[in-house]
Image: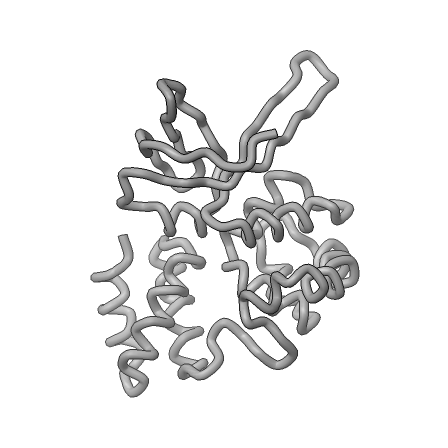
Amino acid sequence: MIEYIKGELTELTPALAVVETAGVGYALSISLNTYSDIQGKKVAKLYVHEAIQTGGRDDNYTLYGFATKRERELYRLLITVSGVGANTARTMLSSLSPQELCNAIANGDEKLIKTVKGIGLKTAQRVIVDLRDKIMSTGIADELHVGKGTSASSAINTPVYEEAVSAMTMLGFSPAPTAKVVTEIIKEHPDWTVETVVKETLKRVK
């Protein structure tokens, strides 16, 4: 069983990272959160989840890579939910940060979970029912500072945050990495308008 792969980051796209170690290049499927974390690095360490699918014409062996153990643990919890497959779980972690997703589960925010492509109301409800207690008991929630009544945008100007992220999304930028940048900017300049925040975000988002 592979725990992690560390080596030269030879190729990187928002969905795939190739890490070369000991002369072997490993292709790992990644989320946008992990892409944002390792972008610009020459050396990467990715925690691995191995997925083996058998049956049909061909067997399929896929490596999923995560920048942190906690993101991998959350991914593994997501795929235990009926209706959430490997790619759907990765899409969830691409649309929402681990903290945002954990907060949504802890607070029963099915509307936010349902915004993820491929997730309907029933699946969103199952995710909450199945994982609410688990994210608290595993320690993920503690590390991500998740709890009742908290959110990824706590302690910041929420209306400006939501409008800025929405504007960036409409401009074609991915929500997860954009949200991180917007949060940083608003914490630095809490009195800025939406327009100013968006302009600054455009300068910082890669």
